[in-house]
Structure formats: C-alpha cells, structure tokens
Length: 82
Image 1 (cartoon, rainbow, N blue to C red):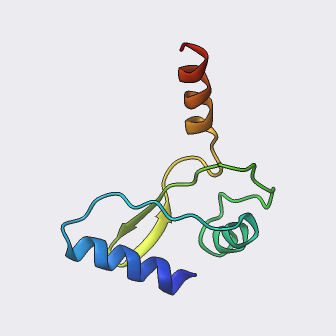
Image 2: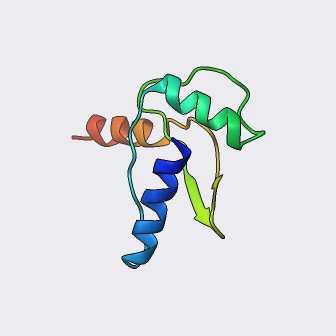
C-alpha cells in the first residue's frame, strides 16, 4: 500500500500537485495507518471515515484527525436543510 500511495503522490506532484481521493477497505487502511502514525490507536473506523495524508519530502504523514466523519456530518446537515 505504501508504494502505491507514494506512486500516486509522486505522479500528482509531477502533474502540478493537488488533492487526490484514495478509497480502500477499512482493514487495509487500519493496517497502513498503524505503520505510519503513532496517532492511530487501533480502533476500527466507521464507513466513510476520512484520514488526510500529506506528501512532503518524499514521505506521507497524517494531517489532522484519523477517521473523521466531518464530511458525512456536513452532508447530513446539507440534506436536512433541503
């Protein structure tokens, strides 16, 4: 997983940078996070949880909370106001 994420990051950087959405199974995400971040406590994440990774100086690191439901909650608020 690390080599593929680094490949995506490097390719995106060569094309001018920007955000990329990568979707994976919860088990794979949990295993990966346990190898790159001391912030990850091993708890399973809910569906649609988001963890932001940033590519800098040839490495990926977690930026912000792990497994946030911010976007899910924001979508619920928007839907409720329609």
